[in-house]
Image 1 (tube, rainbow, N blue to C red):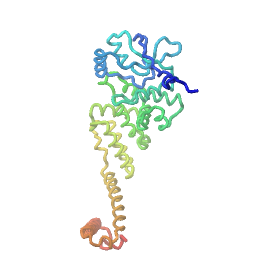
Image 2: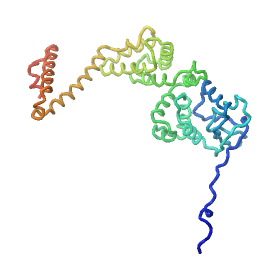
Image 3: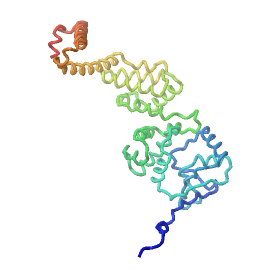
Image 4: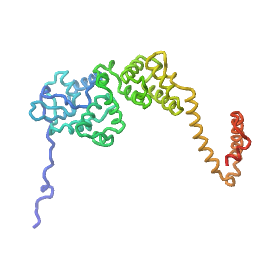
Length: 335
């Protein structure tokens, strides 16, 4: 039997999403696992001005913990701070189910991601809680869980290796006093260089304190946090040139004396060794390319043959200057 009822009448009515409820501003509390704990005054002032003008347009996402009469904020803490400041009695919310500790932290990461204006140390601390809670330390797995890049996970782990008092200085609520996480991340490879750690004079805290002071006061030639890359480079090059003791002595002097500069770490012999290694690799590639030339194919390329003749003359000249044996026989020895 064919029904006379129109097909549309058989469809269930569309679900209407629930309207956000409004609750007292005082009934909310910050999430203790929010990766963002530093809220600088200038951005907050901008948001506060907007809320004064048009109100809170996007409801806060909250949950109610078992046994608690307050709502915990998952998303919208900055809006709540501004609402409290300007005396709003109520704020709109969307309530979700209470998450577990791990779910809470993961959700906070996924909601907020990592914005450019965030300080990294608070994120590192919450990542540390997640690592302990899940017994998971693999960078790729943590990146999948949190939505953070693997590079960010690696940077956070470096920050977690520093003692609590240094972490506190990265968490200072006053931006002018707060130490940048980048300072410690750039310092990390020098502090953990295998030769440095094995040095008899090595004192981790002494080095950290000296580097912080020199970088913040622009002593010993420090201009930016990336200057630690120069120090690491000098260490690596000196080690390759078997000048490890010399570079470590110079580094020790840099740590203790403001008159010693970063540039003083460079050992001329090590620099020459590095340049020689680079030039050797280039010559090996060039020799391979030259030997691969088919004379018949390139016979008409006069400029190519002229440059090869100039190169041969230059090689002979340098071998003579270096008092190398039989420079005339270079063509034969090359084959």
